[in-house]
Image 1: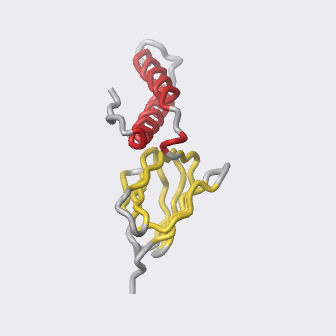
Image 2 (image 1 turned 30 degrees about the vertical axis):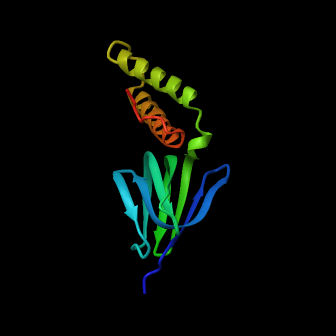
Amino acid sequence: MLPESIELVIVTPERQLLRQTVVEVTLPGGDGCLGILPGHAPLITELGIGELTYRAKGTSEVGHLAIISGFAEVLGDRVTVLAETAERPEEIDVARAEEAKKRAEQRLASASSDPNVDWGRAAIALQRSLIRIQVARKRHGAPVSTE
């Protein structure tokens, strides 16, 4: 018989961010999103930069976290996320993320004329700032615009 829920554990090098019983998880995989339900086949996967969502058992509310790289182990009744960085929406400083977005966009814009600009690093910085803004705005109820 398949389990009805999954234990979701999210840890970073600094702390354990979450340990909760959930009924579904969506992970930002290195090559796209992965949907995990109770009874999922075991796997280990690399995580990319993106939004992790989960729905706690007994509620329709969805939780959101910004995840920046790492790995996940999926078992039939547990998902363990080892993230380089993981943040709850209320922990994200939107103004700081907006500034990081502007800096990354400026670096990318000057990359064609300045050989000292590391385009790959600037693109990752932009991606990180955009996901942080997206997740933070879900909590604050602001429209999600990344223009």
